[in-house]
Image (cartoon, rainbow, N blue to C red; front, side):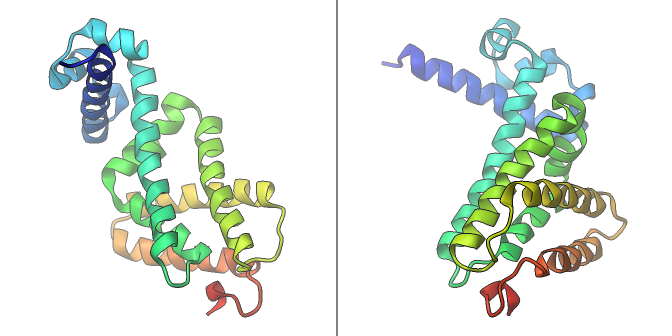
Length: 195
């Protein structure tokens, strides 16, 4: 027998999945609550009960997209023979090539959630990468919080450059080189990131 908690989880998952797909396809402003609930197979009341409205549903979809990228970064670090800060940044840049990631995170994220919240979220991800790099001796003990803020802004701009480029693969290569140069000054001599 299905419990109330399981029904709630299933409803939330269906709404986030439907909202995420629609937001990625057409953007937040062009998607109606009616379309979301129809695709999710639930009532309008269910959306408002679970999320309070379309903006809160978008926030959940946004968080899910970023969680997937963050999890990919952590997984990559765990399996890499020599994890590097540049590899962490590369996974984020790879995500930026995905039109759904670009639309939800880089375009609609700031418009719906506010630029500050988006930058704060990116900063937290980058703080994790910087701390991991510091802990493995790849970078000299830096002031992590301000560096994370600056690198978050640079990565956001690199992502936008990739997603809006006429030739995304070339923009991705250019962005990777730019990020490599930005973080080169942080790297400890002889570290894996310097090889």
